[in-house]
Structure formats: structure tokens, C-alpha cells
Amino acid sequence: MDIREVPQGNFNRHPWEISRTEMLLGTLDKYTGDIRKEADSLVVADIGAGDMYFDKVYLERFPQDKIFAVDIGYTDFSSDRDNLFMSNTLEQVPEPLFDMTFSLNSLEYIPDEKEFLKKLSNRLRPGGLIFFILPAHRFLFSEHDVFVKGLRRYGRKEFKRLIESVDELELLDSFYFYASLFAIRGAEKMLRIPTDRAQKNVPSWRYSAEHPVTRLFTAFLNADFKLCYLLSRLKIRVPGLSILAVCVRK
Image (cartoon, rainbow, N blue to C red; front, side, top):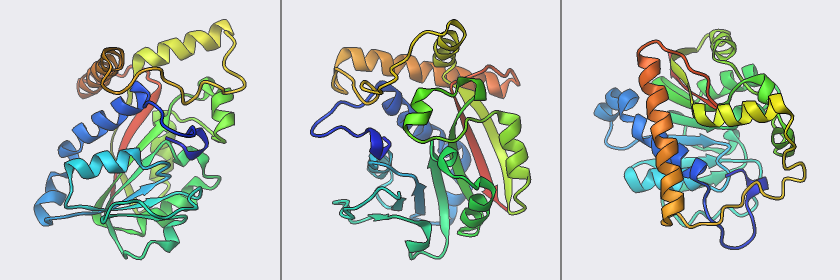
């Protein structure tokens, strides 16, 4: 979760965040087989890591790996994990090269995205991977994007052109996901339905992760993701609220 959205005290994770984490971790094996064969443990960076929810779930699955969480919002650098380290900038991270990096809904905040991608790719070893999750479709730009200081949303073709402009990177795969949420957000846009302009309800969710309601919504979003992925393998492109893109360092 973006640090600007983290409420005070205990709070419940939204099914969107739970599903995004579960589905991304579930797809890693499809892309990381060669990397895992070459090393017993990986050095990973998470750019724009926020409150590190994804990183902590990742380490539950891959406890042998080491993660560097990078976010300009950190003031307390204690992660309570021996293999989870925090820093404000990529330059502060001591490891020379990463095996893998994540940029989960963070690239849209960076003014000079091409220069940043060059800098990030130089910290990847040859054959290293970058996993991006990006907000999709410019016409869906909303008050929430403004609230979290997002600068843009992306289309697949637009993102492909961006990666092609960075000599060090190659785009391996990309597809839209959460078609159901795209339909809802698109309808709101076209019908000009008022949104939460004050952003009072951005991080709120009434139910715990174990509650049947949360599990039901999470399962629905997981099914949405899997269907979008399957259709993309069949070269059927459906629009979605987000894009998952995988790049490799040449």
C-alpha cells in the first residue's frame, strides 16, 4: 500500500491488494525458472515498496532471498526482518547488482521514466528481470491518481515503446488484468458518476483477510486475473484496470 494511504493503527487489507500480491507471486515461476536454477537465493529490489506488504508475503514464500525495499517516504528504517532492508533511494542500496526487481504501481510517479529505467537496468545483472504493475488506460485517470500523486496511466503499446527506447531492456511479456474492475471504472467515467473526491475511503475495508466476504472478493479478482492471463496466451486482448509487464536485462 502507498504510504500516503496507510491509515493509523490496525486496518484491513483490501481484496485488490491481497489478490494483486497472490497473483503476482503465483506467476513468478513462469518467468524465473532459469534464475532460480543459477542461485540458491536471489537479491531483489522493490521500488516504491510502500508499507512492504508485498515484500513480507514474498519472503514467506522465498525466505532464502534478500529484499531491498526502496521508498522516498521512509523515515523509520527498521523492517523487523533480517533479510528485508529499507532505503529512500536506489543509490543508497549497497548491493551492486540485483537478480530481480519489482515496480508495483510506482513507475507512474516518476517524472523522467526513461532515465529511471536506464538507471534501474544498470543495477540488474544480465538476464535479470523487472516485474511492473502499471495503472492502465489514460482515460481512466481520476481523482485517486491525483491524490496519490500519480502522473500517468499506461497502454500496452505505449509501454512497449517506452521499453524499446531503453537499449538495456527487452519486454518479455505484458497483459491487462482485472477486466471486471476496468468495466466498473469505465462505466463510472462514461456516466460521470461522482467519486470519492476527498479520498476518505481509499484504504478502508470493513472485513479482515480471513472474513468470508474478503475471501469471496479476493477469489473473484483472482479468477479475473487468471482469465485475463489465459486469454492473453490465446492472443485475445481484453482491457483491464492494470497491466502486468515483465522485462529482462539484455
